Image 1 (cartoon, helix red, strand yellow):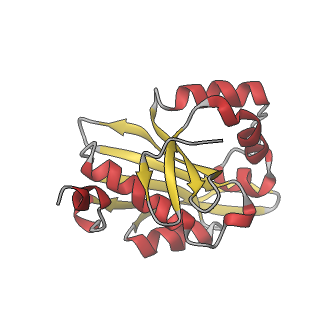
Image 2: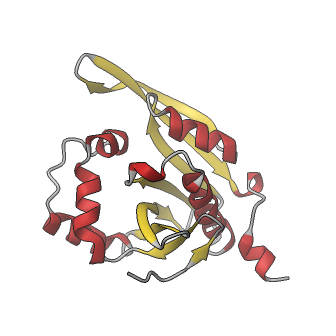
Length: 186
């Protein structure tokens, strides 16, 4: 399948989400290793429900497939949601659904691409992520890019006999300095 190249990096590019991959995304959404980290573990996600959700994503924000540049394969989703154009902020959500593509720097690059879009195209000033204290991979990725922890909701997630914190991190436009968009203007 050929994807539209909206935001292009070296390892990946971001393509607007549509419902063409509803069955693949439903598989990812029902994968325990993905859904436990996105907080969707208790959701019952059918292909039809996933299709409907995908169709509404860009009405509620900006959503992109993360596509591996090497083989043009969609491997995850990244999106900006709960956008306030008045207060110039949003929440970022991302997952790599295909486990063969994790720990290769693709998530880092995809996050930088969407931050560039958020700060330099739609002129937001603050992007926040919400994750869980056990999701060290997400926390480390965000710290590497420049996110700072701004708070925790302690013991608010319970899986079995385990309690975890929700972790809130954000990045300001003044903390972000890697822009392919601004480079394209030169």
